[in-house]
Length: 475
Ligand SMILES: Cc1ncc(COP(=O)(O)O)c(C=O)c1O
Image (cartoon, rainbow, N blue to C red):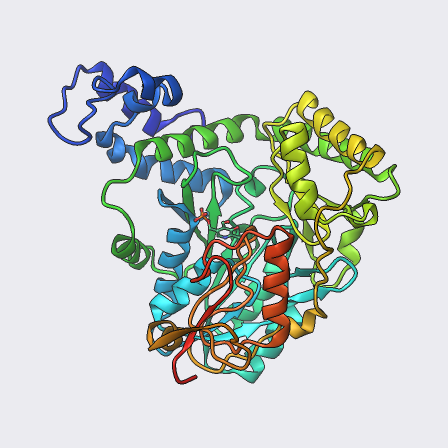
C-alpha cells in the first residue's frame, strides 16, 4: 500500500477546498465563528480542520495503519485508550465469565471488568524488590493460572509497564492459543513499537489477538487518539466495532483521526531514522546520568530481572533516593526549577518518557537539570515514603468488583478489614492500589495516606483527602 498517502488529511483538505458550507455540526463552521482569543491559543487551523465529513476516509486510513504495522485490522478510536480497553474487554468477556487479568493493569481495565460483569482472576505481577516496582508476570505464571482455572475465557495483560518493562507476549499468546482463548494486551505506551526493529516487539506481531495503543503517549497523535489492533482470527472485528458503538462518542474528532493518519505516514516513511536518533539520544543521556553515582538508572541490564522479556530504552527511569529525595519531590523540582515536566514520580524514581520528537537540545537540557540537581539537591521537604513489603499490597478479592461497586456503600474513616467499593489509583501509572471487592488491609491504607502526604496524585478516590474510604455497607 502507498504509505505516503494520508486519506483523512486529504479528505479534510478536499472538503474545505471544494467550498463546502456546512449547516451541520460543528457550529463554529470550520473556524469562521471562532473569536480571536480562542484562536490565539488553539489556532484557527485546529477549527478549520474540525471537518466531520472527513470520517468517511477513516477506513482507508485504518487499512494503511494495519499494513504499516502488520496487524490484521486496525480500528481507530477517539476517546483515549480507556474506551479502546472498555471496547476490547466487553468484546472478549461478559457477565460471569472468568478472565485472567494482570493485577498491574491501568484502572480502565478494572472499569471494563466492572462494566462487563466478568469474574477476574488476578495475575500477580513480578515484584522487583530492589527497585520497588512491578514487572509483568512471566509466561510460567500465566501457565500456572490457566492450569488452576481451566474455565478462564480470555487473558488481559499490560505491557510495557510505565517503567518500560515488557512481557513475553509471544509465550503468553502461545499458551492462550493452545486453549483457543484470546489475549488482549494493553500496549498504551507502545505506539512506536511497530516502527523500529530495536524496540520491543509490537504485541500484535508477537501474537496478541487485540492490542490497544495510545497515540498520545509515546507516539505522535493528539491527546485521546487511540486504536485497537487486531491480530489472529480469534476476534470478530465486527463484534469489536459493535461494542465500540456501545461505549464511544457518536461525534468522533477529525483532529484525532487526522493526527493518527499523519503520524502513521511520518513513521512509515521516516520511522527508522527518527527512532534511531531517539535511541541514540536515550543511550547518551543514560550513560551521562550513570556517571553520577547517586543516580541509579535503569538500563539494558533490566533484562536479567524476572518478568522482563522486553525493555523500551525510551523510558528513562532515574532512582533519586540516594539524594535523600523522593521521586515526587524531584518531579516537582524539575517542574518548578527547570520547567521540565517528567512523566512520573514515585517513592524513589522519576520517569521521563523520551520520544522521536526530542532533539539534542531537549535531551541536553534534561541531562543538565539532573546534573544540577545532583550538584545542589534541595533539602527534603517531606517525609520519605516507605513502601510497605510489596507482598502486603496483594489484597484479597472477596467480592466480584461489579457487586462491590454497585452495591450499598458507606464512607468510613477506618476501612481496615472492610470491602472496598471504590478504586484508588495513584496516578501515573493509574494502577489501582485497591479496587472494588478487595479487602482493605492496614498496609494499603497507611501506604495511600503516606503517599498522599508525600505528593502522590490520587484522582479517583471518593474522598480526595483520604480521610474516609468507600466500602460495601455490610462487607
Ligand atoms: C497503561 C495504560 N493503559 C491505558 C491508559 C488509558 O489511556 P487514556 O488516558 O488514553 O484513556 C493509560 C493512561 O494513562 C495507561 O497508562
